[in-house]
Amino acid sequence: MRNRSGLPLLVCLCAAFTTLLDQSSLNTAIPALRGSLGAGPATLQWIIAGYSLTFGLALVPAGRLGDAHGRRLLFAGGVALFTVAAIVAGTADEPWVVAVARLAQGAGAGTVNPQVYGIIQDLYTGPARARALGAYATVGGIAGIIGPSLGGLVLNAAGPDPGWRLVLLFNVPFGLVTVPLALRLLPSGRPPATRRTTLDLPGLTLLGLVTLGLLLPFVLPAGEGPPPYAWILAAAGILAALAAWEVHYARSGRTPVLIPALLTDRGFSLGTLTAMFQFGASLSTTLVLVLYLQDGLGWSPLHTALTTLPSAFGFAASSSQSWRLVNRPSVTAALAGSSLAIAATIGVLHTTSGPALGIGLTLTQLAMGIGGGLVISPNQALTLARAPAGTAGLAGAFLQVSQRISATLATAAVTGILVATTTTGPAAASAGLLICLAMMLLSTIFAALDIRRDVTQATPVQTLSKL
Image (cartoon, rainbow, N blue to C red; front, side, top):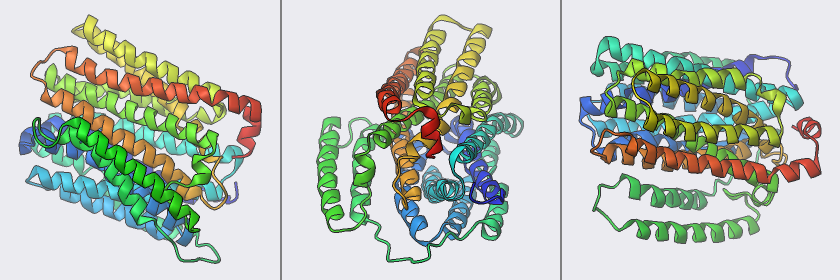
């Protein structure tokens, strides 16, 4: 560790708790919000998926600005934006206002996140860095434990409205505390020789258009707009234009959104793909269960929260020890276990009912949480270790962009499936979970493909020593 003081890490953990408490509690409140404001399917999908969209788009410029000009002000500004937008969302009277506020919250959280990873990269090395990332993930797990259960309790006690408003306002006190702490305790991190920063706004715009091209088929009402294949073809064309632009931008001596040195590194690319599909699958699995249990089976928010709660417990417990298992075989095994847990969830939905259904889902959620805790921090540590010097914040941002694009598309897809269905049976939930299972299997495959490189180029101990 380069800095013996743990205060900067403490501030980072406060930010993690502030933003992740919001994410973990929102799912429980979605049915109540929809009923209170009369949100239609498309608006509801924007409320859920729009956060991840702007989160991802903010990451790269925020990471680059943090690398070049220091992280403290960006960190504090991002938390402040997130907190103000939470107040707007929690006091809104129209669903579109909530959707816009969630877009702003995503931008705020996306500004904070690369600063967190950059600060950890700057201040910690070796096993200390892995432990710091593990602590960050553990706090996320704790927020995951508190969020759903607290949300369920509030909704049960206060009713749908103002219950959902109180849930959206949970993070405001923590945000108000975190901003002054960041300004006081974080290092400025300003490089000694700061030069003009290029943000590659054309590349970022093209990346956003690619994501929108894939997202819009899920959020447009049925029968409106071009057919889905037209959106896919448009996204493919924009992706080709993005690739050509990035090559041109790199040859001009500037730093593109998609850094060639990162994309051509096999370890970084495979680690990013692993994180991308795992993250989207995990978020969407919980969302499917919350919507199905409340809308399909009529469970109360508290009952639903208690059923999904073991996932957060498992995540917090396993992530706190995950720094001991920083190697690709362990990551791959945990992903395989998560895939089996999703498959088992589908089986439970079709073969059980009553108390047996609750017990079965509790066990599969526990397995999902344990698997996620053993994947996220080790995979991040292994992947970010491949980043060239001076690109810590940008490398972390790029890793997060891939996860957020995955989450945007996956949550929009499963929400569309469950909201559009007219049946209360498990078929719609199973269709959503099959999407999650396919993504988790892809994540497992990409992690497995990197085992040979991990074994032939470095032992786990040697890999960890480079972190």
